[in-house]
Image (cartoon, rainbow, N blue to C red; front, side):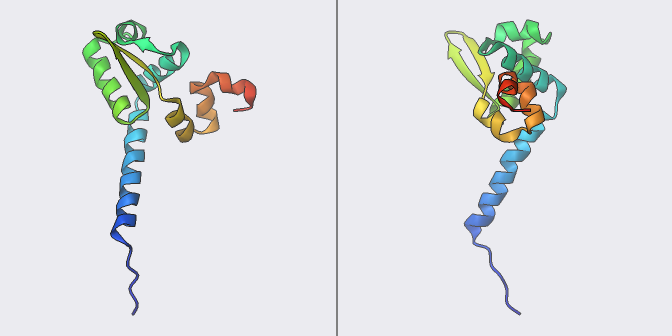
Length: 115
């Protein structure tokens, strides 16, 4: 009987890749985080102080959801002084979402044949 061996680095790369996707899809599997992403899509670069009012959530809970989205690389953060500004990571979103979902989070694409 001949055994096939998989090089360790190939197996590890697959595991890491799946873990990254798992983290991204877990981040997407929450209505509040989807709402946050939608608002960032509509408004662009937005201060956390404004997001608390927009999504009607205390800053502590909002920070929890933003951290999950940041860790999944779905949003970007820029700090200016004491304020943090967030925006969607368009490259990451575009590579993950179907055309139908893509049109929800990238409405400007619908005119160019996204949907």
